[in-house]
Image 1: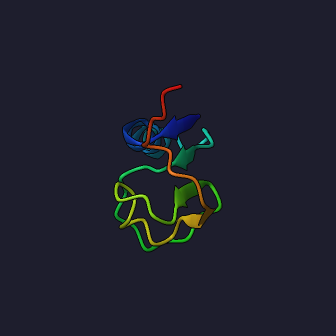
Image 2: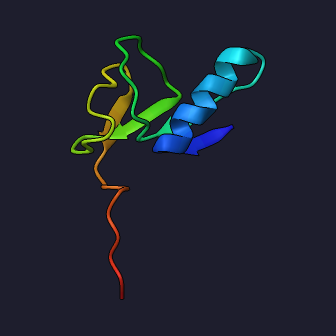
Length: 68
């Protein structure tokens, strides 16, 4: 299951209840020190700032919107 932002928190809870499901999150508001290859956050994302175990190599800001 894949989740972004608050949906990432929901996906992580479902994964905790059902360990056979693989979860991948992007910018989830998580407080964690454990390392994971399946949690990703942007370096300047204020919502996932406390997810210290997430991969933070991405440089985009997913919570912004640019209308055209």
